[in-house]
Image 1 (tube, rainbow, N blue to C red):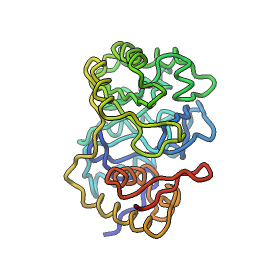
Image 2 (cartoon, helix red, strand yellow):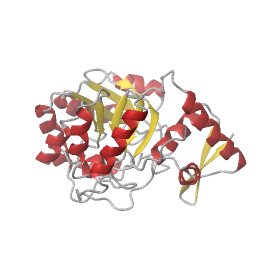
Image 3 (cartoon, rainbow, N blue to C red):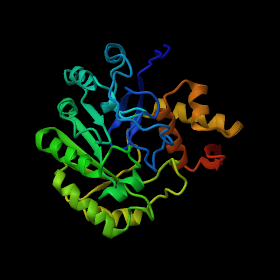
Length: 309
């Protein structure tokens, strides 16, 4: 049977934290309040804090409902995609619909809009909220996350604290570490001190696994990650590879993409266009192929090209 052509859903795709995850995309490509140096989707062309209905909420819910009735095979339903989901003015309506479903909902957010009361109220509808904290002050925030000019670190962190104090669901914290940028023990200790104020249920340490927005953003070694994980309370978990045993469709996608890269080097956008896949879905499979050392990434003319080895 032919896979339905969804506009706002992608996957299910393998997730290091959420197993088999159905992605729900509420914003256009790279609609974000940040321009993180480590972003696997590349640079943010124009940062924004403008909250509006980027895509029709009713259409998104209709697609989710159709998927639940015709497939429904996932571990989590995840508001993520290629931009910041809380920029969608009605993301809470989507979460309200998901709350009545048997599969738990997740909000993946950079947390920059949680200083807005209505955003906190809407975000609280998710079963799990994963926020990010990879800086410890304004200078490091600007260095690592390159925020919108109107975003201050203090306001951002205050929003995280306010949300934690009012949210009774699972709060997960991701800390993205970059060699030579924010991975010195003295700096990670500062992040860990702030993390304790948020009382997260889980902390995940992450580093570069796929080509980042900037080629100076480098991965931290596994040995160093294991040392730094102990600085957090609770001790941080290191993001590991996808572990689901349900890999039939993943294998097919990997094989198809690898066959394409054996013919010629391609950017992530080339692959996305060729297969009609969501860019996050393509990125996941490229990460799996790189982990298996079946492909390599080269930077040419400010674009990342993937080729088979």
